Amino acid sequence: MNEIKKRIDVMLDRNKLHHAFFFVGAGVPTHQEKLRTAFFMATKVFSKSSSESEDTIEQRIQKKYHPDFFHIDTSDQEIKIDQIQELIKWIYRGPVEGTQKFAFIEHAQRLNINASNALLKILEEPPSHATLILCSPSKDQILQTLRSRMFILQFSEASDAQDVFESPPSWFEDVERMVLQEKFDEKVVFETTQSMGETRSDLLYFFHWIQHHLKTKIASATNSHRFSLYCDLFEQTLSLEQQIYKRYGNVGIQLDRFFIEWGLRVH
Image (cartoon, rainbow, N blue to C red; front, top):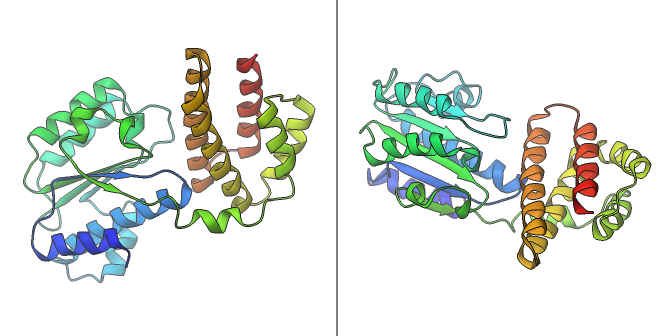
């Protein structure tokens, strides 16, 4: 059991579980660990008032069969107020099977301003039977007024990254050259992205590398155009990363668009 789960276990043992948690950390392995931790927390709580095994409870949560677990995992670029209003109606109703409910927002950085303000009302006056969990790659990607009302858990980004970085895929040299030069020939892009989409593990290598590269570019940007460009590209990599995790859509086509758009905007 990792340190974060140990901390949660202590809270549960002492009946001191916070009403809202903010899970922070970037990268696919980190995101997967945040998912596992959210499911772990809810499973532990639900098991206290259930005759089902923890394995059965967790499977129901993951498959969205549990009536007391509300999961927003949209692949849209924006979480809108109607989704939060639906959550609000759900959360103020009493639990169906036990004594507690959990609401889990997987990509809280996508909350628009209206959705954020609506969510703030729950955090200010949470029902006693509810726990909220929000996830984001970094603290600064949601409103400070939301952050200040949650218990923040920082997930390490390093634990799984080293394994990913040990052996570059065969196509990586071509991608690295294009990205560093910021020159994206359509023919080369198409040929490269076809190879990139062959295995999921190789794609994870790319996303770890490109996100680190874009963070560096954001930090060193000398004008607002470049800063905005690299921030937008970083957000796109997070979205593409999630599509791979869910095996959603044609990743090769999405990568084509990503590189071509980069080339059009940089010049």
